[in-house]
Image 1: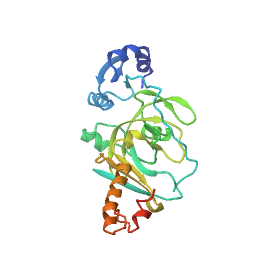
Image 2: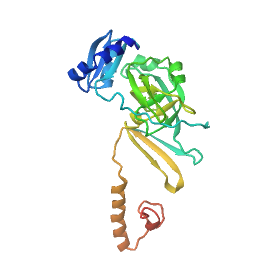
Image 3: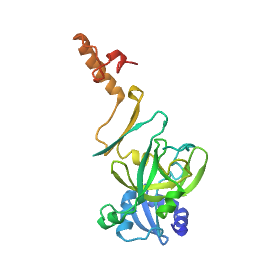
Image 4: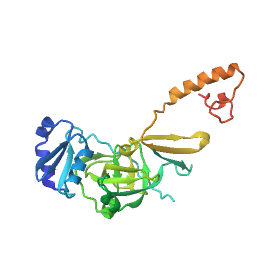
Length: 80
Length: 183
């Protein structure tokens, strides 16, 4: 993943949220290449246009970046 | 419809299965499907996890490259992780695509199967007769509601009581009051 694309997303977050609310934006070379209704649509766009992994990012334009919770407890035993 | 049932030993009070992971690809692309390189890993099922979590080992083995960033909260910390596009093949041969996994330290498993996968189908854990069992099917085909089920049993029991048939309608052979009639 290119850091530049993520920096572009962070720097333009407010505009992106306002222009494309609750969408998935595909950013490549610091430009919005695709606005999709779902992650699936954005990912398939990248695949079908032969975009190399690591050259683009897909970010959701919803104010929940810090709301995603991955709660888990590590296992300290080995199962067979 | 594909389904999976796992009997969980009482010595292992967690749901641990094997599964296969690969870099995500377009499922409509036959060549990509044929060339997909899956690795076999141990999977922990966790309804308390909103997404899918993989270990660094999985990222390294598959050469995964991130395609987004998110904040991750877990029991002990908050950190930023990249999203890694993966596809998962469950033991019942169900292929699940368009998953975005985050990275976490794991012990005893390589992937945490959270709600991003569980919400694609119907999932239940039962403890009938003291034996724990997990079952999962994709896609979802029916709403399960234990409250509505209890009312249904009570209605059937009322009719059966009148006819002096007191066994539970679930077919266990036990008296209704000792089976589904228990509160």
